[in-house]
Length: 183
Image (cartoon, rainbow, N blue to C red; front, top):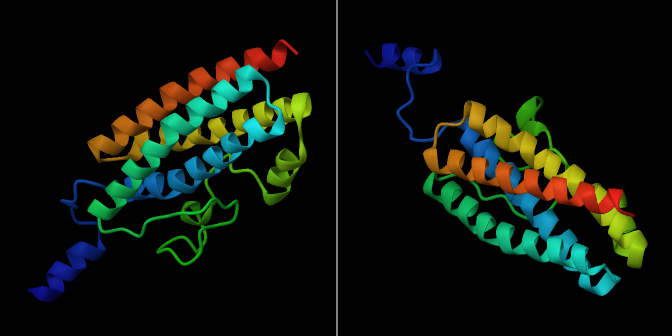
């Protein structure tokens, strides 16, 4: 009998967890993704960003810092490792994150170390342009992750968060595109 149960589990027997692998991947990737966006946003005041860019940066921090805590809470509730620290590289050392396939991929839209260095060295209008372009790419990555969660997730709170992230970041992308066009 035990062998039959193990066989059923191995063959994809129904899973009664309130979350699934898509939910875990969403939270695991979104935490460092949001942390990197907050790190980028914190550069704005000291780098001579224009008032509109500083306002966008402030809004990013205000929205994403609480979302990081919420995502960490979800992972803790699901008894999953909690991701942290922005990185453009695959998240090694986490279950499923050091092999091939989608789980090994870094979160979409993450800036490379070189791009972060470029942003950190820019000031004034050059900072504004670099920030807006990079943050648009960054937000587009979040839209990709949110779309995957909405398509494949199971946890209702994670799916609601994905929808909220999608709505907020789409609106932010449109605003940043208008600012870039007005240069």
